[in-house]
Length: 282
Image (cartoon, rainbow, N blue to C red; front, top):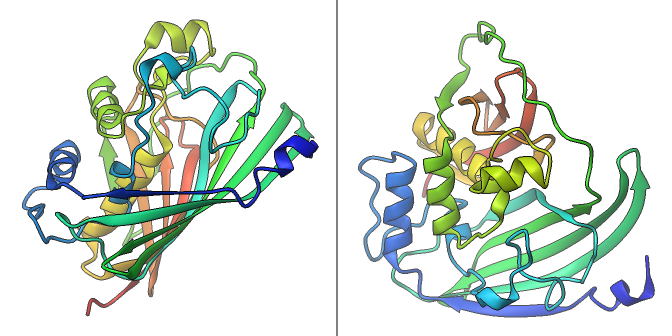
């Protein structure tokens, strides 16, 4: 690892947010979560903390791709492609709407290596979320930077197989309207989620890319729709991009206290896999 990046390990920043109910109400509408309580004092659903503690980067400090310019809290890695590749979360107690919470972020590690697709850099960031002095959520995120790759072909559409008994499933039309709403709710200006010409001509993808966190939230919502137990742990790993060209195929296979989850594209390849751990509510 270059010496200049080792200086970022251990770097921390803190941020507070009042957890206004409006983003949660908007997310409930976006995800078709009918009858979800999003009033003051209500529990914020798991993973929805991503709608808060957002960086408000001035317009003049955005890079061409819409991401904030490199440097600041995150190390100034020059590789052009950035991806939220995975996360591991533990939910100790729910955050509650209408009350201030604090987030502490600390860079745990910065690593670089070369692979078949070229140079890669991995940044691992630890987050802790507290409210009323109590630890509510712990999260560890993996951010991957890589070189620009070859153009990606549109996935072939195949018929979904017959699913085993007990499998939870749902198809979601992750079209440009849904991607726009999620980008707006997360103040995300990355152009691959809304600028079709840029995505095709500059980054070589066949369609708009579905946000990894949006896909993870849809999988967590699949759990909520099928099981009333409380989500205590959730982890996910992205394997391939999903596009707005066809509905997402969400699957869940419950086994005891855990659920194996995956999001597939129209070619039936797993693009994002996840695991949820549940327990009876208090």
